[in-house]
Image (cartoon, rainbow, N blue to C red):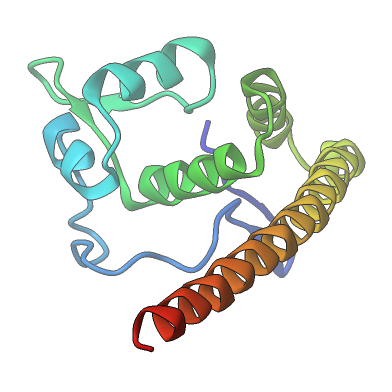
Length: 154
C-alpha cells in the first residue's frame, strides 16, 4: 500500500510539490544510495524509517535491492518537514499509519497536523522574542563599538 490516497477528484500526496532533479515519470526507480544523495539522509535512517513503519513498503529488485519511487521521495520530503516542526517520531509514524488506513482517517490526520501547526506557531512566537533580544544586544554592541572607536580617534 502506498502513502498516497485518492478520493474522487482529490488526491492527498502527503507532500509538497514534486521535487526537481527526479527522473521522468515511468523511470522512477532509485537505489538506496541514490536516495541518500537526493535526500541527505543516511542509508541507516532510510532502513530505520522502513523498519518503524514511517515509510511504506519499499519495493525490491529481483536481487533484493530496495527500489524507491518518486512517490517515496515525496513522502520523505514530507517526513523531513514534519521533523523540522519538532513532531515526535511516534506521531509521524501514527500519521503514516493513518494515511495507509484510508480516507476515513482524515479527521484524525487533520487534528494531528493542526496540533503540530499550533506547536510550530508557538515556537515561531518564541523565536521572534529571542530574535528581538538578539537585535537589542547587537544594537547595543554596535553603538558601544562606535562610541569606543570615536574615543580612540580623538
